[in-house]
Structure formats: C-alpha cells, structure tokens
Image (tube, rainbow, N blue to C red; front, side):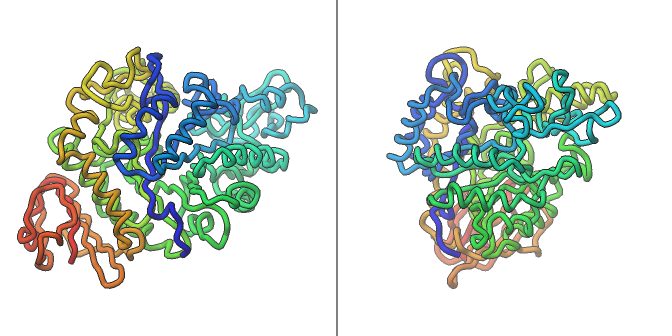
Length: 541
C-alpha cells in the first residue's frame, strides 16, 4: 500500500457549537477555535474534523444546510473560516470539512424552488412521489422517528426525508445535483481544506421505491465520479460515515485501486450494547468477548485493500468512559485504558473533543433539559407507545447525543471557560475538577497519555504498519493483542472492568521495554500480573 500522510495522522473532531465561544453569545464559534489552536498543536494532532459550520437554520445542529458556500452567522464569517484554515496550516494542522450531501435543509434555495411546482426546474433535485391510496408512498421510516415521507399540500405530493422533515433528501440520480455537489466540493478544496468527512454517505445511492436506503447499486459509481471530479486531484483525507458497512463493503470504499475514499467509519463495535434487531435505545450490557471479536475482525479483514478508522466517541455517541468504563472511582484509569487500547491499533485514530481530558456523560432528569432532536422525537414516540418516562430518560442518559455535546471544559471559572454568556447547552457540573487546565498541570493526566500515544504513532512504524494478532488465551475481561513489524513485537493489554484478572507475560528485560502504562509498575512487575481495575499497558516482547 502506498504510504499517505493520513495513515500516520491523528484527527481531532471539533463540534464548533460546544468548543469555545469568543463573543459571549453562549455558542462556540470559529474565532474560538482559532484561539485554541495552540492547545491542539500541543496535543500533537494532524487534522481537525470540523462538524458543519455552513449556513443552516439549525434544526439538526448544522446537519441541515441551507447554503454550502456560506458560514452560519453565529459561527462567524467566511473571512474567519479562511483565517482558521491559514492559522491551522501554520501549525501543520489540516481542516477536514463535514460534507453533508445526502440531504439539505428545507430552507436551501434548491428546495424552496423545488416545492413551488411540479414543473419547476429544481423539482427533481429532490425525491417527490404521489400518494398511494391516499397515504404515504411506502413504509420507509425516518431515523428521527415516524414516516420518511412528508406531504406537501401545495403540490399534493410527498417528499422523502430519511432524517428530519426539515432535511429533504437530494436526488442523486439527477446529474445536475451531482454537478452542484462537485462544484461546491471544489470551492472548498481550492480554499485549501485537508479533506472531507462524509455524513451518511452510504445513503446517497438509495432507491426509495424499492425501500433500499443504504448501499444502493449506484453508490460506488457516484463515489468514483466524485473522486474523479473533485478530491482525486488533491492529497487529502476522505472518510465516509457508513453505518451498515461490513469489511467486504468497506473494501469497496477504501481499496486504493478503486479510487473512492481513504477510509470509512464503521459502527459495528459501537452497536454492541444494543439489543439484537432493536433500536439503539434498547440497551444491553457490553460483552467484552464480542468487542474483541469485532475489533479483531476489522483489524485483520481489510488487509492492504482498505484502511481502518479508529474511534470510541463522536458527536452522535455517548462518552466512552461513562458507557463502558467507570466515570466515578476509576475515571482516569478507564479513560487511559480506552486510549491505550485504541491508539496502538492499525488505522487512523479520531479523538472527539474532551475525550483527551476524560469528559463524561451529563445525565438529565426531564425531557425539558434535552436539545437533541433525535432524543426528543424518540421520547414522545415511546411515551405514546406506553413506555414509562423513567425508562426513556434512562435510555437518553445512556445513549442520547447531548452527552457528547455539552460544552468543552477548559478551566474551573464560570461555565468552564467556554463562554462569558449563557451556554446554549448545560455545562457538566463536574467542570470544577475535570478541565483542561487541571490536566495540563498534572504530568500524569489523561491529556499527557493521549499526547504520548499520538507521538508514538509518528515515531514508530510498528504502530502504523504492524500486523495485528488477537491473543485469545486470556481471561474474558482482558483484551490483549500483539503488533508485529520487522522482527519487533509489542503486546497491548487492557483489563475491562474492576474484577481481578491474572496474566502471564514473557519476562521483560529493560525498563524501556515498558512502552506505556496507566499504573506505575517496574519492568520486573510485568511477568506475573494481577491486573488492577481498568489497567492497560503496552510492552515490547
């Protein structure tokens, strides 16, 4: 496989609304991000994945775009955006834009025109269908609850929205739609962005009349055309959000010979605490053996025909420390355990803002405290279906998207140093102890664990290129794997839980054989081990 810069990269996701407010309106903005670039440079990251900053009415926090070539006024101006790209570039940090092209906002000029009449030139930019027996065209459902079809009184047809009714789906079969998208992507590439994260890109090949949404038959034709017409001419990172991907499907996207994307986000591992065949809100405990099998499969199955993305967290997922770790007694240990386990695997790691200081979920007691449209819609739908309020709130506290979106905790001043105004979403009350300032003052903090792991990837080819081997002869709660490269072997061990687990390793010689550990141990300690709660380490064998 030809070496690319993004294979040694570590990407940091910024959710602009919650990162840093510069003007006191309670909403994070581009100038706020610029102000914090030195912090990100210190962490050592290569690129920032920027959640959408385009003009938007904000029905789904910016994932409903009304103008792809303008900046949302509350985030700043295009001049601020240009300055962010320039300032990041001076620190060798690339800006990865969030590309949302499965759908637009219903306030986008294309849709405003489209709904005017059946013979409007923009009508077939979207997916319109006649009623069937006076009702919806078929049983397709929206991810945000209810039917995926919305009736338009004026034209007496339905339009498709796989998300909110304010997010009508684009008709990718229309060549003019594709050309509009290529023009927009080239606009950003010419500005010097470092690539694109592609929101629900597996849905653009949908065939709604056959109720096919993900992985439609023309999907890969569209992506190859996109590569040819836009980013294929640039040295950039492209990552597709693909909820239904298997390793075989992932190879179609990311095999270099196919000229599609650099890599995909697959979500098989993060669905393991969801009951089989149910929705994400239907919880079940994590089975560590299942996690080992799924991650091992993805580490080995792609071979040289694809590239992995590595992540625990993003703006749609709860905080990993609260989800599968311990966010009270062993918060620091479990946060470091997740970091060590993930960052020494093969693939490009993604850090979600606040993950590097161990930020945790922020439970709520009532639906009035929730901003997230997905959680709100689910709450009302389940309430109507007879679920108890307490059950629904428990699901939201476990899996709701607001958990990841509470403002970044910079210091122990009011509102965690995020804003001088009233924050758009409640700040987690634990910010007095849990913040960036406290992490930077403690050489043993979670921040410095992440910084060390990022540096390892830059300095050790074994982390980037080494083969992965799962070790199965270990206690069930222990996740152990080996990385092999040019005669070198590293062992990575993580204890998932608080119970004792014993482990035997070959004797280590020198203290520098211990690469990283979240508990203080001498090299001699590592031969016969009783693992401590959430203990994790990497050693050279």
